[in-house]
Length: 124
Image (cartoon, rainbow, N blue to C red; front, side, top):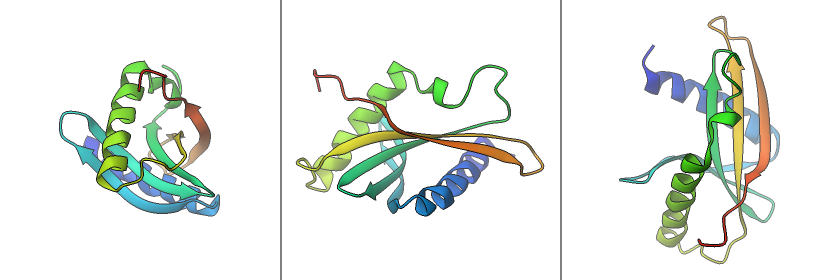
């Protein structure tokens, strides 16, 4: 299975669970050249939520959430700012969530939604 196909599978699983938790999915795979991609843009209550999805086969080298390091966070923040500017949403409260999925080839998986997984540093 190609990396992109695996990513799409994880995003579909995440969308299903996010909807059950009251998220309204606005957009998937918002791509900003040179900055990266936001897997899912959603709305929950008054928040615009940017969701990073991480799918791992196992946790031998840590959970998917642990792979969202400071470098990935900065890329996500920059892409989110671009999304907000493009859509005239600069005064909307924002948060960044991570969906960490650990699963196997048989389709069994565990999922964790980490709300407000990281904050925007003051220099942004």
